[in-house]
Length: 425
Image 1: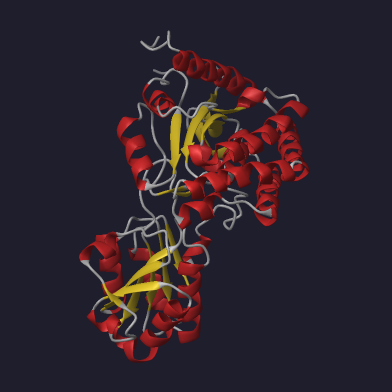
Image 2: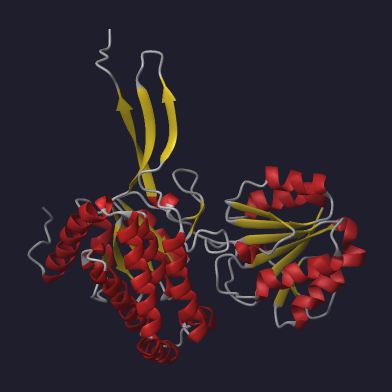
């Protein structure tokens, strides 16, 4: 089948692929009740084994610090009691979601009497390659299970112990519900070649690959994958403060959008301020960020707000910092903000702060990003916050899935046609 079948790695990966195919066939036929039972058992296992998960995570965090990994990556990696409970609650929330498999998305009757339905079906086998965040193991496993897909997970080396501990809880849930453990598999080796094998040599098994991590990872996946990819390169998100914004609201939203968690893809990376409100809005918003420990890199006008502001370069407008740094500039109204986002943005998430409904609607209609918000923080760019229970990631693609990738986005569809003996003339 593949030229590397005689290698140890090849045998390992091919075994994962065969197991996933077999499990996908079982999972696609599983009832909603069985899938929900597995999910609830997995959530209970995460809670029951939280001490073991925390111990594994402590080893990963210590190794990451010793290796000199950055603060943003360590923040993504680290778990505590609250994050473990959120992980378990996310799995349980997926169980509570409507099952997309088998739902009729559309139905119509043709003049010749044929009744046609568009019915949701699983994608099949999904490969997920991700970095740092152990919660992705739980989120991805739960979402794939609920949507009837088998999944092969390949987490980063820095989170291998944490991922293994969480994965054990998921398989405990599967076995308890009578489903194959192969529904959710984890690549057990940290060999770098395993990623290349997953991307290029698993076309007989994988139907789609989802990368979740930094730009270098996503670029590699998009370049080397031999199957379709769902993902995004950058989360270069913007907050635009309009002339009709409430200044306190603008200050609060900008601060939360940037500083709540700087290492997530929904964190704001650029602040845009309407030239018409520089005198009233610029100083409070910029100083709130500076006082919170955020480095501000601004254009000439923004630099006048506070001596702590550093000059911005052209590269800053394109940059996803994933750190306590934000680029800031003054623009000519909402159209200037729309133009800036179109030129420099990554089509991820953008927010406008304004009390003017007409201005807000112009922004929401003309900004071509996966998520656009009015008077809300960009940190709401999250499947859980959208009521999806969890997400595999935020897609900036313009086909199949866009925005948070939840259970519905992990399905495709088929056409079911019912007749009464019709033949085509």
